Image 1: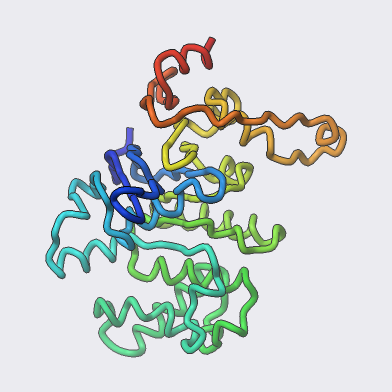
Image 2: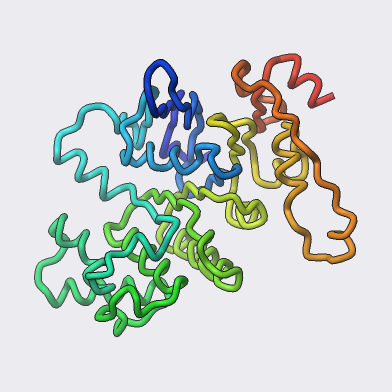
Length: 301
């Protein structure tokens, strides 16, 4: 088995007052292995994007540990250690329109990391590396001199991907990177991510609510609901043998490409069972379900 790249242990991210906190992320734990893609899925507001932002230190966590390459990244760090961490872990944001500075050219956006970390010897080398990154994501080197408003949504997201790649990271958090794109463009971007993963030995946390696309790109899937991971397992296992009622409800909502099958598809409602008690329990090899012992027995019967 591959080595663990990231370990999340009892991560909590609470907002608001101490007396009445909003538990956006409420004690979740999972591992991500080198070279794999872990898909994190759930409805809007379940805490999946907050999880990604907490891991990459955009938020100071309430409790728990995030261990990356054996180091607790939320422990107090020197500027040098934080700079090195920022090179190793990058993020692709959801909105390609809001995440690019309209006052900067594509070349300036991609090259900003080079400037901060001093990763070039001269301007010619900098220009060449920016051109290589543009070509790696399916754009032309001439695009370096254009501003964000001159690109389509899909092209902007490719620039965002190139920016994430600029520091040669080993781990990328993709926070709903295709949700703002046309359906015709989504598959292109996902295929690009898979291609880059093979070429650069990348590891992904892929956050999304589109279950069909998550199945296509992910090796394992974690299903999140109200700040907790309620099911975790291999992609095919989650799709073919869902156990938690919430997972079954989510999967029943996925549209089917066959109009005849779609016409008779039955939605499975979720009754919002109590989730404040329980824990992740291994019900099959590498397949975990959150609940009390009695709940899990009932679901697996």
